[in-house]
Image (tube, rainbow, N blue to C red; front, side):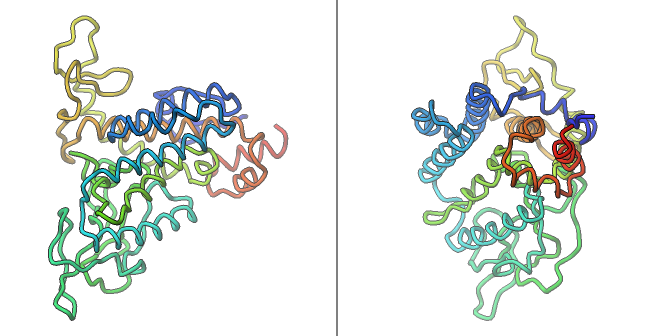
Amino acid sequence: MRPDLNCYGEGIKALADLVGDFDLRSPMDLHAWYRSEWQAIAATIGFSQELEAALAPLRAVPDRVRAAQEAGLAAFASWLLAQRGGVSEAHARTQAVVLGQLIGLGRERGELWRATADPTTLASGACYRAAESVDGVASGERDLRGEQQLRAFYPDTAAGYFGDGWSGPPPRAESACGWQTPLTLHLGTFPWVYSTRLGGPGPGLLWSSTQSRPALAAFEAMTSLLDPAENLRQDARQVAAIAQAFVRQTRPLVEAVPLFPPGRAKTGALYRRSGFLVAHRGSLHVAGLDGVRGRLAAPAYNFVLRRFACFFAVRRAALRALASLPEAVRRAAEGSPDACLRQAAEEVHRGV
């Protein structure tokens, strides 16, 4: 039997259907689907104007997926350059190095969506020297020079919208800045990278200073999962488990929001439409829902849900087109720890 998204568990196919289906072998499908999804990313973060300028000359390029990725990265980088830095330079430099290591580990393990590591094994122990915190990261201890050591990232370990928390295993070495848990970042939903901080703007957008922009590396990691080859390197069972946790935690909040009533909608009111939250003739950015796991901003809900939907839409398209993908990609799929992907690859190999 031909494998499909049902292999990944309940609700995953319905998630992918939120953003529609497409055929990787159809240039028209690729152009329409990738353009739409990049526009959705840009609209939420705020770089729509930069994106349209970058996409304009790419209407006839042969590799639509790569071209869209490069244009989107260039547009985000241009937008980020114009923003005021959110952290100190020392903080941003440390974040950039640690993110590089964490992204490398995530890709190597097939766990890029939620990348986790013992912070004491990373550069500078995932700590930086500063007089004070700029973005609310908890303070640590002072070093021999009397400078305060701070954690480079928020210790996101409590129960949140992406799961029930990650308390261990604890760091194997003593931390200079107070790490007592693993460093965990949900890069697949950047800039909302923390399970417990979905109540406002994406915290990852603060990862920038006047000189260093670690946010760009995290953004590239998130959007790389739209590439079929990179998507297939990710163990989708990890993504499915986090997606199911997110849907489970948010369902009671979202189902309390009324469905959009055509012709009877109230100005400024929050509604559900086609699986997402909408504010009728109002600003979605001021809307949100309050649950036992904290505030859930409406833009965060839509963006995160769309990231899960896009991941599995690309996975579905890649499974269907697996036989036409490069041999190296098929070979990697055959050795994947992801049992659903491995089954699909074996069937292609047997000519099923």
